[in-house]
Length: 107
Image 1 (tube, rainbow, N blue to C red):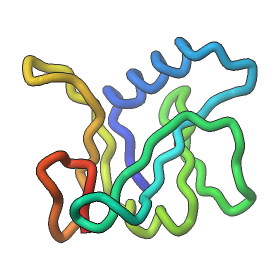
Image 2 (cartoon, rainbow, N blue to C red; image 1 turned 90 degrees about the horizontal axis):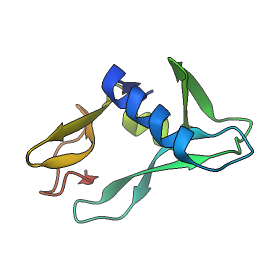
Image 3 (spheres, one colour; image 1 turned 180 degrees about the vertical axis):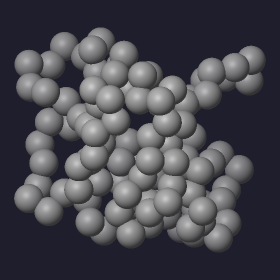
Image 4 (cartoon, rainbow, N blue to C red; image 1 turned 60 degrees about the vertical axis):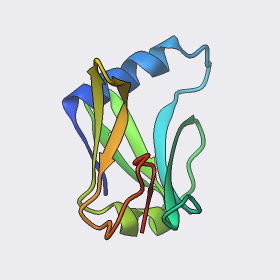
């Protein structure tokens, strides 16, 4: 399962609070085929869970991963960086043998 840093958890919490949703939201992290290196990360807010989804809480934020994606995300860390070069979420994945320049695709 992916680990979420405190910085990333706080940013996700802020973003969820800014959503106008009546249903409770959580962050879904998934790995899908595609991208320039073969697999790509997908992150979005969701309100529906499958029975076999894996859920972990980081502070007030719940992160959900489907079982197929979990095998690619074991040991990975989700962080949020905010600096002069821009702001955004990054995933450091020790399972990735190679990554593309954009950081959103790996194999």
